[in-house]
Length: 279
Image (cartoon, rainbow, N blue to C red):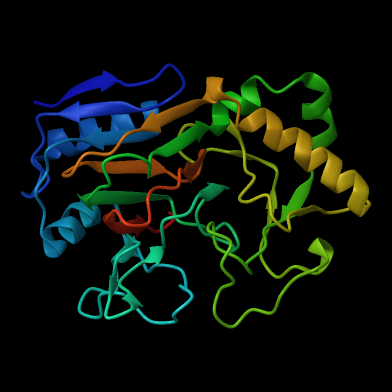
């Protein structure tokens, strides 16, 4: 039997009693799914997984979505292209993963496509002694607490989700620099979307950089987006994850944002990550 312990008032829970290296019993898997919908972010501590075991656990939760394009244009683990590597480690001067050691700004994953992934699973193999913490923000709660005037202003409106840059600010391979957000390549998504399983309305912001609200002047769009982002990323809506080796964290990409603190470039941080296709 699993034990679910809330980690923060806004979102996040720790799940005890599950060995993710083995196939999960149906009732255990059902309990994890319920906890995920209830808490949006789940943490499993003390796990020891091979890459095939990480893939097998992930597949019990849904169909895998391949990683988005990284700046190097090739999978980091050719034998397991389903896995994305998040790391600052270099071997012979070549990065073995993406996002380096800098800050990763608030974002949801791959919202620049029409069907963004449902969620993601991140497994900590090496962590620095300090820094590199990850934060999540609850977009259902953020919408619930949004002032009525802002709810009225964004009702029925959609925004462009730029595909050009990743959350570390690096330009993706094959994309030209964007100077006018109105010309940014990427999907159009409603600013408020019902969660497909719970039905709760959620803010759906993607990334701030090069976002643009359709039908507004650029200045109006910028001001409204600034107000939404300032509201949505308040501490009251967030949970902070201080990583330990062996942590597995899964999050619901449909109703959260996340970001990462920078850390010492001389320290090593290595994470393997899978993501789940929308359904």
